[in-house]
Length: 613
Image (cartoon, rainbow, N blue to C red; front, top):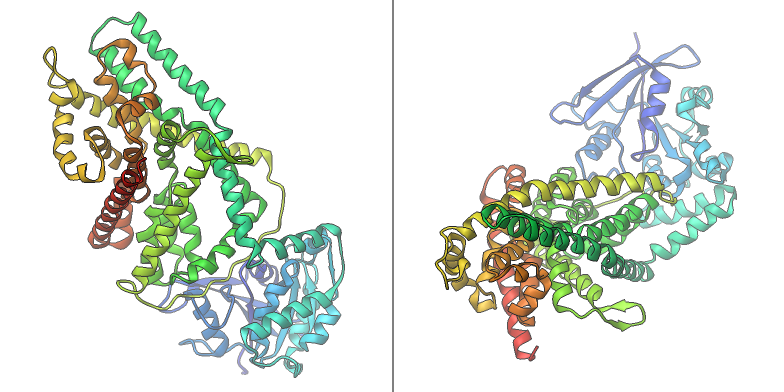
C-alpha cells in the first residue's frame, strides 16, 4: 500500500490559512503539539477530485524560513523535512492575502525557490475588491510559474479549483524566474509583481498607497510622527484647561462648603485635608488623561499606530532591540504592568528581559497628574511661537526624555548584561480607516473609569493613611503639625539623602507614598500643605499656589526630572518579579532607576541654579 501524500498550507500570519484549512478538511482534523515545543500542530484529511485521500497540515504563520520565533522554526523544519518524526510535504499550498499582496509575495518567493510542487491560493479576493482592488491571477501565474487560484475561504469560493490544482501540482514545478534571491531582491520583485497584477484600483486605494509612501518614508515619516506627538501634548494642556479648572473649582467649592457647615474636628479635617484635598487634587487631572487616551485610541483605530511602530523599529534597531519590543513599550505609556506582561510575545529571551527592564521608563499615565500640577504651577501659560504653548512643550520634552533614557539604557544593557544579536521583525500594516465614535467613546469611558476607580481605592487608601500619619501625634500650640507627626519625622530622615539634589522635606515625604501609585505624590503634597495650614482659608488655597509659595523653579524642575526616571509603583515591581522568576532583575531595576532618578534630579537642579533660574 502506497504512503498517503502530505499537503502543507503555508503563508504569512493573517493570510486566512486556518479558514482555508477548515473549509477543506471540515471536521476531519486533529490538533496536537509538535514534539518538544508548545507550537500547535493541526492536521486533517482531505479528498482530492480524483478520489485520493491526502493528509493536510496547517503550518504556523511565518514571514521567513530564516526563523526568528518558535512558530517560524517549526514551519521551516517541517517544509524542509528536518523536523523529528515528520516527513517533508509532497506539495505546498502558499496562501496569500489578496489585499496585501506585495508583502505576502516576499515569503512566497522564498517558498517557491525550494523547488517543491506548489500551488498559490490567492485568498480573500472579496475583501480586496471591496477595498477597490482588482487583480489579475493569470499574470501572477505567469510570473511565479505555478497555478494561482483565487479563493474566498470563508464562503467556499474557489475550493474546487484549488483542489484540482493541488491534484496536479506535482507535474508543474516553479518556473526558472524564481531563484534563491536575497531579501532585498525578493522585495523589489514582489513590488513589481504586485503592481503588474493590479487591473484596476479606486481612488481610495491609491490614496492609501500614497499615504504610506509619505508616512512610512524614512525621512518624512519620523518628522510627521514627532510633529503629531508634539500636537498631542499641546492639546493635553490647551484643551483640558477649561474642564480641569471646572473640576478644581468643584473640589474647592466642596471644601469650602464642608468647612462652613461641618463641626470642627478630626472628621472634618479628614474630609477636607485628606479626601478632598488629597484625592480631589488628583481627580482634577482626569481631562488631561482622557484627551491623551483619545489620541492614542484614534491612532490605533485609524491604522496609524502600526505605522508608528514600523518607524520606531528602525530607531530601536540601533539600540539592539527589534520592533517586537515596541508594542510592550507602547502599552507602558498607559501602564507598565500590561506592558511588561505583553513581553511574553517576544521570543528572544534577551530582547524580552531588556524590554522588561526599560518598560518603567515609558511615561505612564500615572505620571501625568504629577507633571501637570508642577508644570501648571511653575511654567507660564504663554506661547513660544504660533500655536505652540510653553507648557505643552515642557510636557513633550518630559516624554521625550523618558524615551531617550529607555533607548540609552537598552543600548547599555544589550552590550553588557543582556548582550546578544537583535532579532528580526516583520509586521502587518492594517488598512486606514476612520475611527468609530462609538468605539472611541467606549474606550475612553473604560480608561476614565479605571483612573477614577484607582483614585477611589489605592489613592484614597494611601492618602487617608498619610493623613493619619501627618496628624498624630498632635502638635502643641505654636508647633508645626507636620514637624511633630510620624510622617514628618520619617520625611526628615529621608530629606538628608535628597537635600543635595534640591528636595525639601515635603518633597521627600511625597516620594514615599508615590511608590504605591505615582499620582499619590500629588495628593501627598496637597494633604501635607492642608494639614500644615494655620487657618481654614489657607486650607482652601489651590495646590499650585502652595507650591509656588514654598518651592523654587530649580526645585520644581528637579522634581519633574526625578519622576521621569524614578522606579514605578510596587505593583510594577511585583509583576517584573513574576515575569523574570525571581528578585534578581527587579532588584537590578530598582537600583538603576533610583540611581538615574537621583542623578537626573541633581543635574537638573544644579544646572538650573547655575543658570540663575
